[in-house]
Amino acid sequence: MPTHARTGTTLRSLVLIPVAIGVAAGAAVFIWMFLVPHQRIGKVGDPGSSKALRVTRKGRLNQSPKTTTTTSTLVAPLLGKTIVLDPGHNGGNFQAPAYIDQPVWNGREAEACDTTGTETASGYTEAQFNFTVAAEVQRDLEALGATVILTRTTNSGVGPCITQRTAIGNQAHAAVALSIHADGGPISGRGFVILEPVADGPNDNVVAASDELALDLRGSFAAETGMPESTYDGLDGLAPRDDLAGVNLTTVPKVFIECGNMKNATDAALLIDPTWQQRAAAAIAQALEMFVLQASPLASTAESISRSSPVRTVERRLSSAMHRTTAAYRERISTGRSLPPPGSREQGMP
Ligand SMILES: [Zn+2]
Image 1 (cartoon, rainbow, N blue to C red):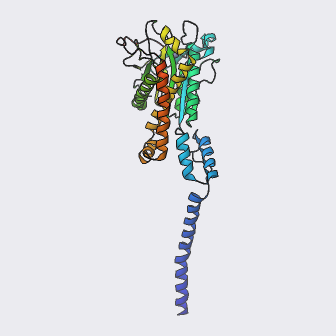
Image 2 (cartoon, rainbow, N blue to C red):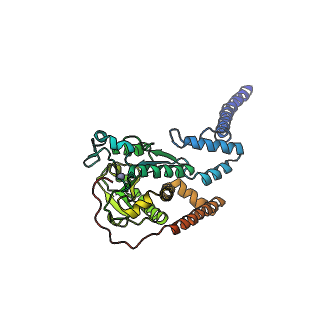
Image 3 (tube, helix red, strand yellow):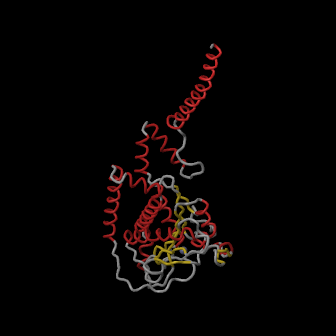
């Protein structure tokens, strides 16, 4: 019997020891996952991680993860999102013809590395306009928590080539990319136009999303800036283009916007006006924000869950306040919406 008793004890030990180890391991995992404060909420390599970390720390000071989520949703809806802005051309391009004239492959044919861009009759350059507006858009989007990458960070350099500008967006796996331009169209022609990709292989997966982006941008830009849709390029403010590296080679949703015609006196008066430039930037930022939030499955889920939450209510109030400001602004801009039918598109580089 003692033998049996010993055997029974040994058997019980054989069963209980693994169970005890299992329970201890489970408890350790639970403590690690839920009770130990973690350093990051962003993924390694995610450009938004540094900002995510800041909010986590802030939340920990508040000792309330719920507050953290609410705060970051409210003040930083674009946290963790990377957006690439490409201000077309560059101020130094005028002095570097050999560099910008070098041919690059745009996916279908050879194209110049870059161009000087156009300018108004008074000599205000498109390169300056593009850069000024891009910097404003950057500021607006960063205020919403986005990580914004510019393809050039000054207006005194040369290039980079259009292929490199596109690669910057692709390599960043940007949620969205936008090339900002103003056109050098016929003197009598007015308005803005959005240049969209045409499926050609590299961009196949983002043509549909880019079309959504174009519609968001067209709606926002028309409503907020008073600039009419182009009277001479594209149709209803949209123009598919298969001759631009910027849309041929993109693997992230991307369009170009020609904000107006620098050669037209009415458009030019708006394009050089700092106040109008800020409105144009706000319209662009608003469209990019809308696109990124709609394109994010996480955001859609969060929105459906919290549609009636206090956060959503505050966001709606902020949004309507923004639109009231915009409406007041719009009243100060005289808009001409009775336009002749669209003509043929402007040829060549945007
Ligand atoms: Zn341009």
